[in-house]
Length: 178
Image (cartoon, rainbow, N blue to C red):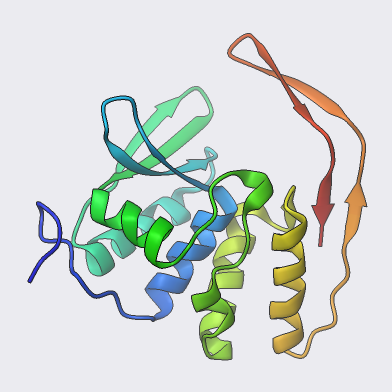
């Protein structure tokens, strides 16, 4: 039995592919339903993230039997996976929080064996490198490091910064750094 129009599997193994996919998603991903009712899993990447794009391409094929679509505009790079089943799996089965301030390590990662947890950490690190605005995510990451026998620490940078995106101001009110 297949779940999506392209044959998205109804079961997904808890393996290195899933852990890396979740690591990239927590670092650089978002999930949304567009105004046209399209279910989208999206990754905001940079111009030097070729290895991440290729890894996501392979993971999407192996894990979800679907393709990613890549878009570039200037130095911005967006990788989209348009699949309702994958969206529902992330949001409603794995309970992935939406919004940067609410992100955290999914329970499936926290309950996985240590080698799988490290796949998540490596993918997260490749994406965000150790920075988040989510206090809970930082706490979860510290917990994962402790599982590996590493005592890590964090720092909160509370400086307010404003950048401009498409003519509108985006203000950052601090972030946690590992």
